[in-house]
Image (cartoon, rainbow, N blue to C red; front, side):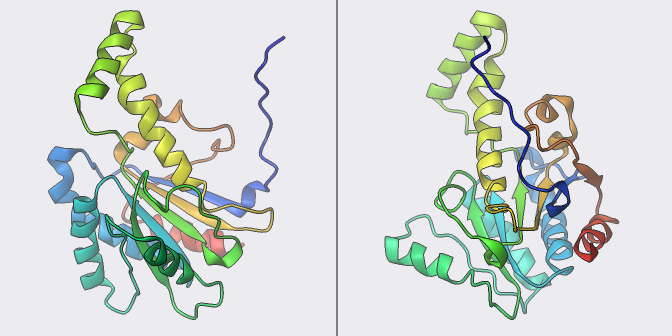
Length: 229
């Protein structure tokens, strides 16, 4: 008997919109060119519905660079940013800003794999969307390279085990912040052209069977149509 059991999602499909923007590369060599397009994509998302959003980045520096462009583009939007050394009180204050009764949009900037990408439970209108920038690959370091060499020798899958799988795990944790109850409704925007490749789509969970591809010209329209339903 197969010890693994795969069950369908208990949540209604129309309560979650998954959108992948395939026109942006977040690879290290392309990052400087991506700052402005990412800021524009975030602005397109939040412009369609007032609410609370979380924006996740692969590093603090990347987050700060896009935050600078975003605040210049949307000066009236509150955009608190995660600090690399937040105390418990600061973390609580950050989360407290995600109030379901907020009259204006809030866009919280965070890092993948950090304090706010797992273990938080913002139900209902406390969070209506996330934007995930990049595929979450770990930084190249001796430990990851040892893993890569080991699995390459074992079966030629070193990059998957050392980088792709851990990265996608962080992506899925961040994406999981959106739908917390059967009554929640929200969006997830994936920003990286790699999300549209077979190697990454094979890592999508079962409930991600409908991921809508968009570009800078139709991101807003796709999201606007979803919120009309």
